[in-house]
Amino acid sequence: MPRLDVDPMIGEAVRATPVAAAPDLWPLFAALSPIPALAIRGEASDILSVATFERMKREKPDLETLAVPNRGHTPLLEEPECVAAIDAFLRGVRY
Image 1 (tube, rainbow, N blue to C red):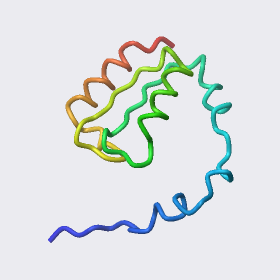
Image 2 (tube, rainbow, N blue to C red):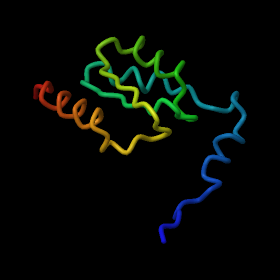
Image 3 (cartoon, rainbow, N blue to C red):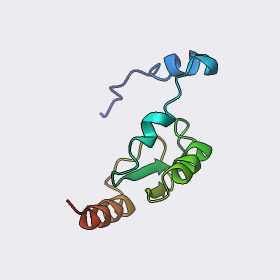
Image 4 (cartoon, rainbow, N blue to C red):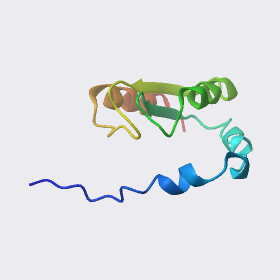
């Protein structure tokens, strides 16, 4: 019989942190500007919001993105659309 092997309270620490106490991570994200990147978001994610995902695209216009339907945070990356996006991304990366 399958059973969950996770801490059901894992998100409580994040949710309990006052918004004002959260650090500004956008300067760190900006450091990715010269690096090819693919961001994958589960459409039902309660951690990576649509607004944040949209801002990521505005801050890094060459960011490749995928929103996976019927997935929370995080997609399993075995979904056909994830596999296709990852394959295409890796084929396009130039070293």
